[in-house]
Amino acid sequence: MNQKIDKLKSILATYKSVIIGFSGGIDSTLLCYYANEVLKNKFLAITAISETITEEEISQVKELSSLYGWPHKIIMSNELSNDNFIANTPERCKICKDIRFKEILKLAQELDYKVVASGDNIDDLKDYRPGYVHIKSLGVKSPLIEAGMSKYDIRTIAKEIGLPNYNKPSNPCLATRLPYGTKITIENLQKIAIAEKFINDLGYLEVRVRHHNDIARIELLSTEIVDFISLHSSIVNKKLKSLGYKYVTIDIQGYRVGSLNEVLA
Image (cartoon, rainbow, N blue to C red):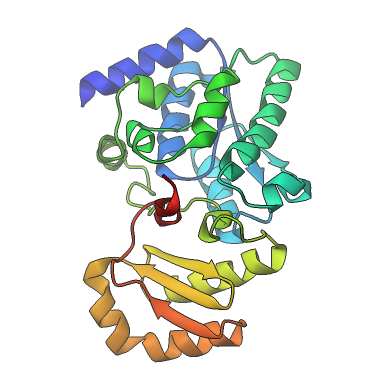
């Protein structure tokens, strides 16, 4: 593991200065931690926010940057004004990344930062990631991938160095809860955010509420499904129906990353 840390540090040292897209997830948090250690005042964390990001995620980003004293800037992203993004095609992630990282690249040029980087890891390459492919073509670097770091590596290192979010579940933007072809609206995003927070507050941290129009399909860890049904299914059913869902279901296959990509060839 130390070899991968050393490799990451050596990669960052070649950048001279870097802006990192900081989501508050453990990947970009670890990357910011070492960028700050290696480059100090030549590092800047930038978080792009919009209606696709929950208030809780934004608060956590602010808390982390404040805790470590990282130079941090929040910018507004306007992907919901883009008709192609709202249409929610399989290229949605590419469109979002294009909007966000072009803005970050522009800012990097204005502020004279030499490199823009993101927190992708080698496990991300196993899923359908058009956004990653696109930002790579724009010149955005992925030092965690270059260092050969997996999600397991990142969490292990983060725990060892004391990062408070080392075991934080992955939480991509709310648009990932809508099947391709379902229009992305602020109303739908808000319903999903409220539903997931309600279930989170019951103690289920790894959860997705997939929005299938009037059906809410809940994905939980397979080990938690039985307890969820016996303890909380009634109250969750009532809450989600109050949000406008007519049917509330549990996916018996359990939570898995990128389940809505399963329809793609």
